[in-house]
Length: 164
Image 1: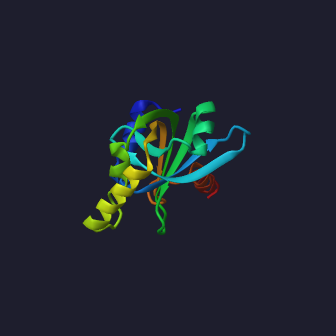
Image 2: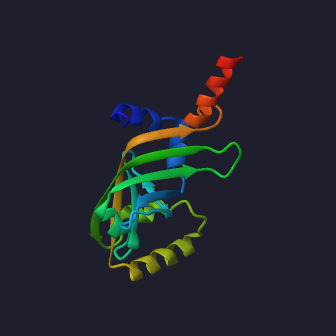
Image 3: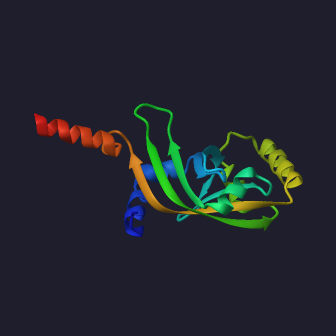
């Protein structure tokens, strides 16, 4: 495990901040049958926590209540890829209405003001309440393939250097 200071140092890097401003992350968790699950989800970074909002009947909630350990990947689609890897515990907060984070996390989509009004009206008509999945990162790694690499690749490079 990383210390809170080590996690903060990773998350405060400019590239991490760019990654935390993206629209989607991949949420990994363990299902009640012991098998892994990964789902793409929209998220909001509030400066200390990842907040994911979901329907009160979302299947992932059953699993997260049993085992709140999660991992997240936020990445880019360019070469070289940029990856922000996070781990933490999911805390579930059932709320009435639509959480502000849900409206905020959908703020970077390309919508006209008219589309935005229509989208918000549809959301408010659909959901009586939602569940906020709140994750405080307890471990973080930023990989940019320029200054940081996956640990296995770094290890191979070091072994190769020793042989030379």
